[in-house]
Length: 233
Image 1 (cartoon, rainbow, N blue to C red):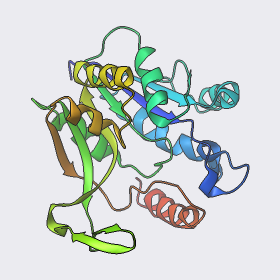
Image 2: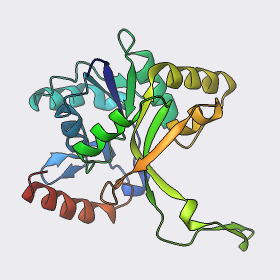
Image 3: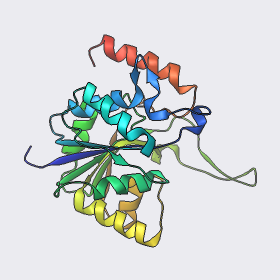
Image 4: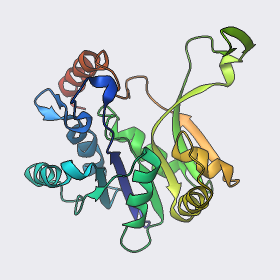
Protein backbone atom coordinates (compact mmCIF):
# COMPACT_ATOMS: atom_id res chain seq x y z
CA UNK A 1 0.00 0.00 0.00
CA UNK A 2 1.52 3.33 -1.10
CA UNK A 3 -0.54 5.58 1.15
CA UNK A 4 0.50 6.59 4.66
CA UNK A 5 -2.06 5.60 7.29
CA UNK A 6 -2.05 7.08 10.80
CA UNK A 7 -4.32 5.65 13.52
CA UNK A 8 -5.58 7.86 16.35
CA UNK A 9 -6.82 6.03 19.45
CA UNK A 10 -8.91 8.28 21.73
CA UNK A 11 -8.82 6.93 25.28
CA UNK A 12 -9.16 9.93 27.57
CA UNK A 13 -12.64 9.12 28.88
CA UNK A 14 -13.30 9.13 32.61
CA UNK A 15 -15.38 5.95 32.61
CA UNK A 16 -18.05 7.05 35.10
CA UNK A 17 -20.42 4.27 34.05
CA UNK A 18 -17.79 1.63 34.87
CA UNK A 19 -17.80 2.76 38.48
CA UNK A 20 -16.22 5.45 40.71
CA UNK A 21 -12.49 5.85 40.26
CA UNK A 22 -12.35 3.54 37.26
CA UNK A 23 -9.58 4.24 34.78
CA UNK A 24 -11.42 2.90 31.75
CA UNK A 25 -8.64 2.73 29.18
CA UNK A 26 -6.35 0.89 31.58
CA UNK A 27 -8.94 -1.39 33.16
CA UNK A 28 -7.44 -4.89 33.22
CA UNK A 29 -8.94 -7.49 30.86
CA UNK A 30 -7.42 -10.97 31.09
CA UNK A 31 -4.27 -9.56 32.64
CA UNK A 32 -3.72 -6.70 30.20
CA UNK A 33 -4.94 -3.09 30.03
CA UNK A 34 -8.03 -2.71 27.88
CA UNK A 35 -6.35 -0.25 25.50
CA UNK A 36 -3.46 -2.65 24.88
CA UNK A 37 -5.82 -5.17 23.27
CA UNK A 38 -7.06 -2.48 20.88
CA UNK A 39 -3.62 -1.10 19.99
CA UNK A 40 -2.18 -4.58 19.47
CA UNK A 41 -4.58 -5.16 16.56
CA UNK A 42 -3.54 -1.88 14.94
CA UNK A 43 0.15 -2.65 15.56
CA UNK A 44 -0.24 -5.95 13.70
CA UNK A 45 -2.03 -4.32 10.75
CA UNK A 46 0.67 -3.85 8.11
CA UNK A 47 -1.18 -1.00 6.39
CA UNK A 48 -0.95 1.25 9.47
CA UNK A 49 2.25 3.29 9.73
CA UNK A 50 1.79 5.08 13.04
CA UNK A 51 -0.48 4.91 16.10
CA UNK A 52 -1.21 7.95 18.27
CA UNK A 53 -2.97 7.18 21.58
CA UNK A 54 -4.75 10.15 23.15
CA UNK A 55 -4.85 9.81 26.92
CA UNK A 56 -5.76 11.71 30.05
CA UNK A 57 -2.89 13.91 31.26
CA UNK A 58 -2.54 11.71 34.34
CA UNK A 59 -2.20 8.58 32.18
CA UNK A 60 0.39 9.82 29.70
CA UNK A 61 3.59 8.86 31.50
CA UNK A 62 2.31 5.48 32.66
CA UNK A 63 0.69 4.81 29.31
CA UNK A 64 3.90 5.40 27.40
CA UNK A 65 5.70 2.98 29.75
CA UNK A 66 3.05 0.33 29.13
CA UNK A 67 3.29 0.76 25.35
CA UNK A 68 7.09 0.52 25.49
CA UNK A 69 6.85 -2.69 27.54
CA UNK A 70 4.52 -4.09 24.87
CA UNK A 71 7.08 -3.21 22.17
CA UNK A 72 4.56 -1.22 20.15
CA UNK A 73 6.94 0.15 17.51
CA UNK A 74 4.21 2.23 15.85
CA UNK A 75 3.45 4.19 19.04
CA UNK A 76 6.05 6.95 19.07
CA UNK A 77 4.22 9.47 21.24
CA UNK A 78 1.07 9.93 23.28
CA UNK A 79 -1.07 13.06 23.17
CA UNK A 80 -3.17 14.62 25.98
CA UNK A 81 -6.92 14.48 25.55
CA UNK A 82 -9.50 17.22 25.84
CA UNK A 83 -12.77 17.74 27.68
CA UNK A 84 -14.75 15.62 25.21
CA UNK A 85 -13.89 12.86 22.76
CA UNK A 86 -14.04 15.27 19.83
CA UNK A 87 -11.48 17.54 21.51
CA UNK A 88 -9.22 14.53 22.03
CA UNK A 89 -9.39 13.41 18.41
CA UNK A 90 -8.69 16.97 17.26
CA UNK A 91 -5.63 17.10 19.51
CA UNK A 92 -4.45 13.88 17.90
CA UNK A 93 -5.02 15.22 14.40
CA UNK A 94 -3.05 18.38 15.14
CA UNK A 95 -0.07 16.37 16.40
CA UNK A 96 0.37 14.22 13.31
CA UNK A 97 3.82 14.74 11.83
CA UNK A 98 3.66 15.45 8.12
CA UNK A 99 0.52 14.82 6.13
CA UNK A 100 -0.80 11.26 5.84
CA UNK A 101 -3.20 10.20 3.14
CA UNK A 102 -5.51 8.36 5.51
CA UNK A 103 -6.49 8.76 9.16
CA UNK A 104 -8.09 5.90 11.07
CA UNK A 105 -9.92 6.55 14.34
CA UNK A 106 -10.46 3.64 16.73
CA UNK A 107 -11.82 3.85 20.27
CA UNK A 108 -9.37 2.59 22.87
CA UNK A 109 -12.26 0.87 24.65
CA UNK A 110 -13.07 -1.47 21.74
CA UNK A 111 -10.61 -4.29 22.43
CA UNK A 112 -12.28 -6.88 20.19
CA UNK A 113 -11.93 -5.32 16.76
CA UNK A 114 -10.72 -7.79 14.15
CA UNK A 115 -7.63 -7.05 12.08
CA UNK A 116 -9.43 -8.09 8.91
CA UNK A 117 -12.15 -5.50 9.57
CA UNK A 118 -9.49 -2.81 10.01
CA UNK A 119 -7.91 -3.76 6.69
CA UNK A 120 -11.29 -3.98 4.97
CA UNK A 121 -12.19 -0.45 6.07
CA UNK A 122 -8.88 0.95 4.82
CA UNK A 123 -9.14 -0.68 1.40
CA UNK A 124 -12.83 0.23 1.01
CA UNK A 125 -12.04 3.97 1.19
CA UNK A 126 -11.49 4.28 -2.55
CA UNK A 127 -13.14 7.48 -3.77
CA UNK A 128 -15.13 8.10 -0.59
CA UNK A 129 -14.34 10.65 2.11
CA UNK A 130 -14.86 8.06 4.82
CA UNK A 131 -15.64 4.43 5.57
CA UNK A 132 -17.26 3.31 8.82
CA UNK A 133 -18.29 -0.01 10.33
CA UNK A 134 -21.91 -0.68 11.20
CA UNK A 135 -24.16 -3.59 12.12
CA UNK A 136 -27.91 -3.88 11.51
CA UNK A 137 -29.90 -3.12 14.65
CA UNK A 138 -31.76 -6.10 16.09
CA UNK A 139 -34.40 -4.28 18.11
CA UNK A 140 -37.25 -2.07 16.95
CA UNK A 141 -36.22 1.56 17.43
CA UNK A 142 -38.81 4.16 18.40
CA UNK A 143 -38.49 7.90 18.78
CA UNK A 144 -39.98 8.99 22.11
CA UNK A 145 -41.03 12.45 23.27
CA UNK A 146 -42.45 13.06 26.76
CA UNK A 147 -42.68 9.29 27.28
CA UNK A 148 -44.86 8.90 24.19
CA UNK A 149 -43.90 7.27 20.89
CA UNK A 150 -43.60 9.89 18.17
CA UNK A 151 -42.23 7.65 15.41
CA UNK A 152 -41.22 4.06 14.70
CA UNK A 153 -38.13 3.92 12.52
CA UNK A 154 -37.58 1.42 9.71
CA UNK A 155 -35.21 -1.12 11.21
CA UNK A 156 -33.82 -2.21 7.83
CA UNK A 157 -32.37 1.27 7.26
CA UNK A 158 -30.65 1.55 10.66
CA UNK A 159 -27.09 0.62 11.62
CA UNK A 160 -25.34 0.67 14.97
CA UNK A 161 -22.04 2.36 14.16
CA UNK A 162 -18.66 1.20 15.45
CA UNK A 163 -14.99 2.06 15.07
CA UNK A 164 -12.60 1.98 13.34
CA UNK A 165 -13.68 4.83 11.11
CA UNK A 166 -11.36 5.62 8.20
CA UNK A 167 -11.09 8.94 6.37
CA UNK A 168 -9.11 10.83 3.81
CA UNK A 169 -6.91 13.12 5.91
CA UNK A 170 -7.98 16.32 4.15
CA UNK A 171 -11.69 15.49 4.43
CA UNK A 172 -11.47 14.72 8.14
CA UNK A 173 -9.19 17.65 9.02
CA UNK A 174 -11.38 20.09 7.11
CA UNK A 175 -14.50 18.77 8.83
CA UNK A 176 -12.88 19.04 12.26
CA UNK A 177 -11.60 22.57 11.69
CA UNK A 178 -15.07 23.67 10.60
CA UNK A 179 -16.73 21.96 13.56
CA UNK A 180 -14.31 23.33 16.14
CA UNK A 181 -14.59 26.85 14.71
CA UNK A 182 -18.39 26.72 14.88
CA UNK A 183 -18.42 24.79 18.19
CA UNK A 184 -20.38 21.91 16.63
CA UNK A 185 -20.04 18.57 18.41
CA UNK A 186 -21.01 15.37 16.61
CA UNK A 187 -21.72 11.94 18.06
CA UNK A 188 -18.92 10.41 16.01
CA UNK A 189 -16.20 11.47 13.58
CA UNK A 190 -18.26 10.56 10.53
CA UNK A 191 -21.02 12.98 11.58
CA UNK A 192 -18.62 15.89 11.17
CA UNK A 193 -17.56 14.74 7.69
CA UNK A 194 -21.23 14.28 6.76
CA UNK A 195 -21.96 17.86 7.84
CA UNK A 196 -19.44 19.18 5.31
CA UNK A 197 -20.97 17.15 2.48
CA UNK A 198 -18.51 14.27 2.61
CA UNK A 199 -19.46 10.85 1.25
CA UNK A 200 -19.28 8.19 3.96
CA UNK A 201 -19.65 4.51 3.09
CA UNK A 202 -20.89 1.95 5.64
CA UNK A 203 -19.47 -1.57 5.58
CA UNK A 204 -20.48 -4.52 7.74
CA UNK A 205 -19.00 -4.46 11.21
CA UNK A 206 -19.08 -7.23 13.80
CA UNK A 207 -21.45 -7.83 16.70
CA UNK A 208 -18.43 -8.89 18.79
CA UNK A 209 -16.72 -5.50 18.30
CA UNK A 210 -18.26 -4.18 21.50
CA UNK A 211 -17.49 -0.93 23.30
CA UNK A 212 -16.69 -1.28 27.00
CA UNK A 213 -19.01 1.17 28.73
CA UNK A 214 -20.66 -0.44 31.78
CA UNK A 215 -19.61 -3.13 34.29
CA UNK A 216 -21.87 -5.62 32.48
CA UNK A 217 -19.62 -5.33 29.41
CA UNK A 218 -16.55 -6.71 31.20
CA UNK A 219 -17.48 -10.41 31.55
CA UNK A 220 -18.79 -10.46 27.98
CA UNK A 221 -15.55 -8.92 26.69
CA UNK A 222 -13.48 -11.44 28.64
CA UNK A 223 -15.53 -14.33 27.24
CA UNK A 224 -15.16 -13.02 23.66
CA UNK A 225 -11.43 -12.39 24.12
CA UNK A 226 -10.89 -15.95 25.34
CA UNK A 227 -12.69 -17.24 22.26
CA UNK A 228 -10.62 -14.99 20.02
CA UNK A 229 -7.37 -16.19 21.60
CA UNK A 230 -8.40 -19.85 21.35
CA UNK A 231 -9.11 -19.42 17.64
CA UNK A 232 -5.83 -17.59 17.01
CA UNK A 233 -7.41 -14.17 16.49
